[in-house]
Length: 160
Image (tube, rainbow, N blue to C red; front, side, top):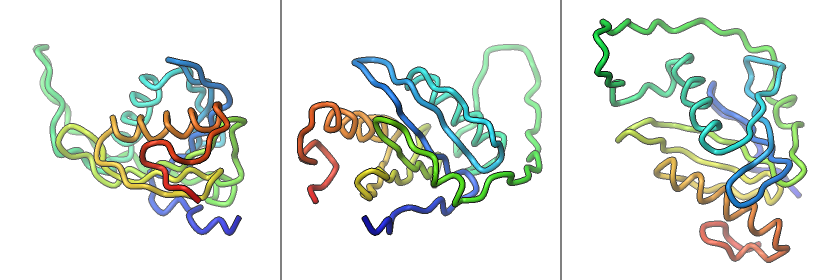
């Protein structure tokens, strides 16, 4: 495999390692450059909330829609917290899951969703996604392909 698609490319690049998956749950972990510790992931909801909090902490990509609340609190101006990289891209790319490994690069947070690209490291394939839902479907179809032992004919992922 030539690994031409294996790169982080942004300060908010995340490596998702999935060790086990069934109908509604995944077991895995995520890595980013600002922590040596893995973040344990047990389902897609948790993954999305954790990534959203990570992007908010970086202020990158900046959201195009502000958070809304019915509480009587005054909105606090979010200041970018300066973060120091503790893991190199090479270290990040050396992490792998038993079932699948993905590099997630969110480039925009517009229309209350995410847009970016996802690389399935096991097949060295990269696709763009236009929403969080599309990203979840791409991960799901890749995991279905792996667990079923099928060729890469699932929705979205091109055949080799």
